[in-house]
Amino acid sequence: MMKRILLLSLVIVAAVSTSCNNSATNKNPVRQELFGNHKGKEVYLLTLTNKEGNVIRLTNFGARITWIEVPDKDGKKDNITFGFDEFESMINGDRYFGAVVGRYANRIAKGKFTLDGVEYSLPINNGVNSLHGGPGGWHSSVWETEVVKKAEEPTVVFTLKSPDMEEGYPGNMNIKVTYTWTDKNEIVLDYECTTDKKTVLNITNHAYFNLHGAGNGDILDHVLTIQSSAFTPVDSNLIPTGESLPVAGTPFDFSTPHTVGERIMDEFQQLKLGGGYDHNFILDNASEVDATLYDPSTGRYMEVITDQPGIQFYSGNFLKGTLIGYGGKPYNYRSGLCLETQHFPDSPNHPEFPTTVLNPGETMKSTTIYRFSVK
Ligand code: BGC
Image (tube, rainbow, N blue to C red):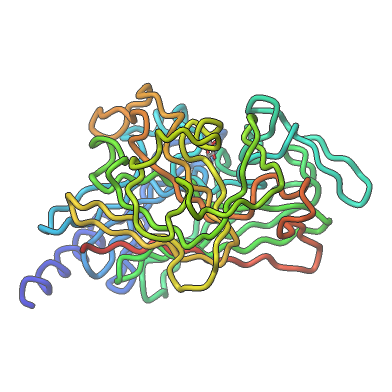
């Protein structure tokens, strides 16, 4: 107990004394510092410390999570998400590490969709498709930053105004993303979006996880569960065919625990098309926790809880080791995985999928939680 009080006071003292804008208080230890400048706007690094003394870092460039430092079963802390030491590397590095992705997470076939008889054309930035809201999507924007001083737990709000026809999408949109780092080691992500014109929207967070610690080996030994009875198979352009395929009896069945690597090399057409797992799992939404990830070697355990209808499970198949991350460690092939809570890819072209249409007067609200512990 004494140790915990001492540790807590040290954290608070550290947070208060290094704050550059006096935003840190005993109740709300968030440190905000200048990280760099992008397109004439200040980019901040925000360090959130919870009562357990665990730290996450965020930045308003792409409303990103850049650091999640949690203990293993022996209490040894390590950062388990992808990011970069330097501001320049972050700007020039992978576009999506930890970022909030919009207006449309994942792919829209051939960059085209129709709303009320009007065809919209989006930038093509992934083969023949439009990916993750286009090259100038929300991941590349500098968001407004607010540290919520009165919050019980460290809380940061990022807001963005996306103008009508930005990256080809209709409607002026207001986007608000609230990050809370709870004392139970949960990252709570609350999304809120409005539009003044009928539009489509699919928002997610694109954090990569490696529970060994970012840059420490691959994720093939991570044990995964996803509470999903069916997934949406894709064509050779990674566009959903429109079907829902039952996972039972396939390498896509994670309704009971399996390591990521156990079946990833199976002769299964969908794995060949995806280069591994790169698919939308339709959530059963029958239990509180939608997905879990466990690393037996460190004991680190992550739970994913969402109100979204799907999870894009991406096993890092396009990572090549060319990006150098924290401490000079490369992000190698399958050294990180994403569990992106979202609507289904290409829904605007699939009326059979849950709708992604947002109308004026409506507010899209959604919550995803990433909870960390040890087993
Ligand atoms: C997609 C992958 C893509 C990756 C880019 C994921 O959401 O499913 O196909 O390569 O994002 O970072």
